[in-house]
Amino acid sequence: MTSTLAHVLIGLAGPWPGSVDTDESLDRQLAFLDAPVRSDVVVRAGYTAGLFAAVLAGLVGVALGLSVQAALLVGAVGGTTVVHAVHRGPAALAAVERTRALCAASDLVGRVVLHARLTAAVEPAVGFAARTGTGPLARSLDDHVRRAAGTPASGLDSFAAAWRPWFPALERAADLVTTAVDAPASERAELLDHARSVVVRATRERMASFAADVRGPATALYAFGVLLPLALVGILPAAGVAGASVSLTALALGYDLLLPAVLLGASGWLVVRRPVTFATPSVSRTHPDAQVPWWLPVLAGLLTAGLSWAVTLAVVGAWAAPVVAAGTGVGAALVARFRPAVAVRERARAVEAGLPEALSLVGRHVRDGTSVEAAVRTVGEELSTETGALFAAASGVQRRLGVTLYEAFLGEFGVLSHLPSPRTRAAATLLSVAAVEGRPAGETVVTMATQLRELERAEQAGKQELAAVSGTLANTAAVFGPLVGGATVALAARIASVETGAAVGPAFAVPGLGRSSGCTSSSWRRR
Image 1: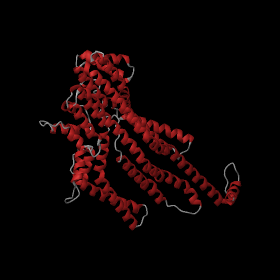
Image 2 (image 1 turned 30 degrees about the vertical axis):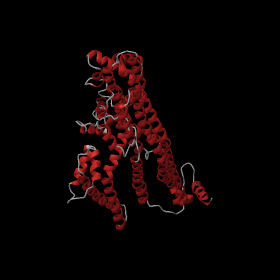
Image 3 (image 1 turned 135 degrees about the vertical axis):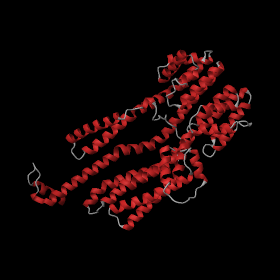
Image 4 (image 1 turned 90 degrees about the vertical axis):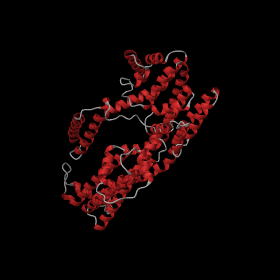
C-alpha cells in the first residue's frame, strides 16, 4: 500500500464519528501489505467514502433527469458499492501482492538449494536466500529466520508452513532440503535437484490449471461485456428507424458508467484469482536513467496535439480534430515521460535473457580450474549480448578499483546498482560466494544456469496458456471495437441525412445534384 493511499484513507476516516467493528482478517491483510493504517481507519474511511458516493450519485441522477425515487436508488447502490470496495480493497491488494510474491518461490528455493550444495547446511543456505531476495516472500523468510535464531530450527520449516495454504509445494521443497543436508554426499545432489524441480513443476501446473479455469469466465466476460454491447450499439440506428426510442441519458449511464464499472469489477476478480504470476522488472521513479524534465512531456504533447489538429482538420473535418488532438497529445506526452523507464526495463530483460548462457560458461570455466573472477572476465569477452557487456563491465570495475566480485556487481559503484533485476542480483551474489569456494562451486553455477532455463520455460508456458484468452480481448478492444463504433456512427449519420431529405421533399436540393435529392430519398424510403 502506497503512502498516498494511506493518507487518503486517513483523511476519509477523520469525519466519521464513533467507533466501528473490525475483524482479524483485515488486520492480517494490512500487516501483510505493511500498511501504515489500522483496520478501524479502513472501515471508517469506507463508510465516509460510501456516504459521499451516495450523495454524489443521487445528485448526478437528478441532474440527468431521473425521478427522486430513481435517484435515491442510484445513490444507495453507488454508496453501498463504494463501501464494499473500500472494505474489501485490502483483501484484493493482499491477494495481488501474494500472487506476485509467489512468482519468486522458484528463485528463493533455488538460492537455498544452490547454497546448500556449497555448505551442506540448512541455516547458512536459508539466511543467504533471505538476504539476497527482495519482495514479500524474502521478507517473510527473513522474519522466520530471525525468530528461529538461538533455536535448533532454521526457520525454513515454519516459513513453508505459513505459506502452505497458498503454495503447498514450498513445504515439500523445504522437507527435501532438510533431508538432503542430512543425507550422504552421494544422494545430496539428487535430493536438492528434486527440491528445486518440485517448485518449478508446481508453478507450471498452477499456471496451466488457472488458464484452463479462467477460460470460461473470460469467455463470458468477452461475450457479455464486449460482443453484446457492440451488437447493441450496431442496432441503435435501426432501432431509431423502427420507432424504438433510446434515451440518451440511459445510453450514457449504461455505456459510460455501468458497463465500465462491471467490466472493471469482473477483470479485477479474474486478476485476484491468479494463483501465481511472474513479475516484470520494476523501475522506480527515482531511478537515475528514468528521470525526465517536466517540460519535455508537456512540449511533446502540445506539439503533437497541434500538428494532429491541423492535419485532421484538413483531412477529416472539424468534428474529429479535438478527439484526435487529445488522444495523440496525451499519447505523445506519456511516451516522452515513460520511454526512458521502458528502456531500463528492456535492458534488464535482455540481461536476464542471456543470464543462463553466461552462468553456464562461467560454471564450466570454474569447473575446469579457472577462478571465478577470470571466468567472469572471459565470458564478458566471449559474449556479445547485454549479459556479456555486464560481465565485462563488472570485471573492469573489479580490476580498476581492486574490489571483490561482490563489490564489482553490487557495491556502491557496481554494475548492478541501478539495474532493477532481482534475478540478476541473486546470480551475482551466488557468483561472489562461488569466488570464495573456488573450483567445487563450478558445478553449482552450472546448476543455477539450468534452473534459470527451467524458470524461463515455465514463464513462457504460462504466458502461452493465457495468450489465447487475453489476445482475443486485446484484439477486440484495439481493432474490432473501434470499427463497429465507427460503422455505427456512419450508419446513424446516413440514416439521419436520408430522413432529413425525405422530410424536406422535392424542395430540398443538394448542391451539384439539383432538386432530385428529395425524390431520390422518397423513392428510397418507399423501396
